[in-house]
Image 1 (cartoon, rainbow, N blue to C red):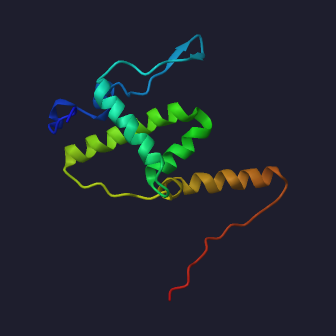
Image 2 (image 1 turned 180 degrees about the vertical axis):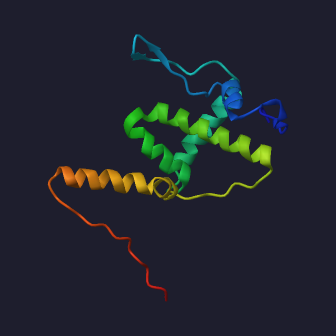
Image 3 (image 1 turned 30 degrees about the horizontal axis):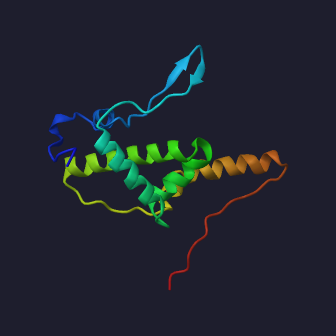
Length: 143
C-alpha cells in the first residue's frame, strides 16, 4: 500500500530502493571504508520489508533464505537483513512493473547460477594443495 501499484513513477528499481531508504550505500574516504547507516526514506515501507525479510529467513529451502545465509557470514545479521529487504523490494517492483507472478527458484538457484565459478575456485584450491583432479559431471540414469 505504501508503494502503490503504479510503477511508472519510478524509472527503475534503484529509484524505488532509494525512495524506501534501502539503497546500498558506501562511504569511503582516502581509500578507507567507513561505517554508514541506512538512509532516510519511507519508514513504514522499510520496516515492513525488514519484517518480511526476518520472516523469509525462517523458511527452509527458499531462494531468499539461501541469499541471507550466504551474506550473514560476511556482513552480519542486521546488514544481511537489510540486503534481503532490498532484494525483496526489487522483486516486488519487478512483479508490479511486469505483472508476472512470483516463481520461487529454491535454495539451489544461487549455486546453479555460479556453478562454473565455484568449480573453478575449488579446482584452483585443490591444485594449491598439490593435487591434480579431473572433474566430470554426474549423469543421472533415466528410469
